[in-house]
Length: 207
Image (cartoon, rainbow, N blue to C red; front, top):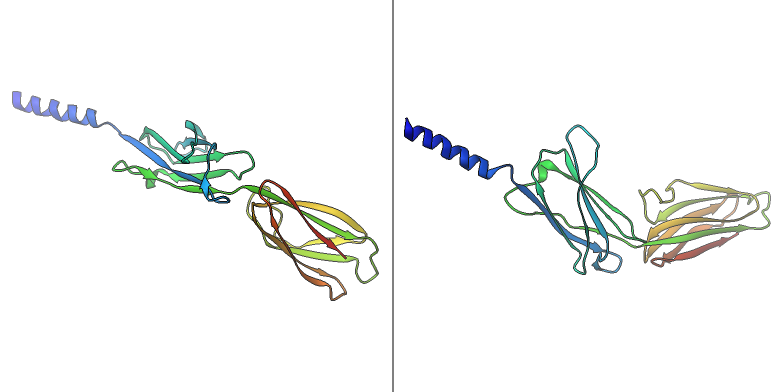
């Protein structure tokens, strides 16, 4: 009987010592525009309990010159974790990391990258439209898509006398282009420009 009690107590002690464990989430965040580390970015890790959309902050770090981050935290049952990274003049990182993909056996490595922002000033000038050329249509071909600040991929239309500008965000040091056609004429083609990181580049169409 005494041996049985000792065995039970021993198993209980081992179970308590093991506990629920801790996850380590680590990795690197890169600046893909300049092929360097995303130095100075603020990284925040959140947990989202099962059945909710609540973001509960686990920790905050500022990236050093190597761009590496590391969080160690209790293995509480969660729906997912959300890693956010932000820095002025760069696109934010907002990544979901699901609980089911995490492991206690080894570090959980997740690497991410982002790009510098640039802007293109789409300027259109039509000072004296004729009866057959007062309608211009244009559609984005190259440029950043699927972000809150991004300009539409759908066809855009301009009518009559025009001297206007449309500002669109883009990945720094990459191409922005659109296809255009002037109704009732043979005037059509592609307008393109490389948008400089952290700056606004003009792309002029005068017709």
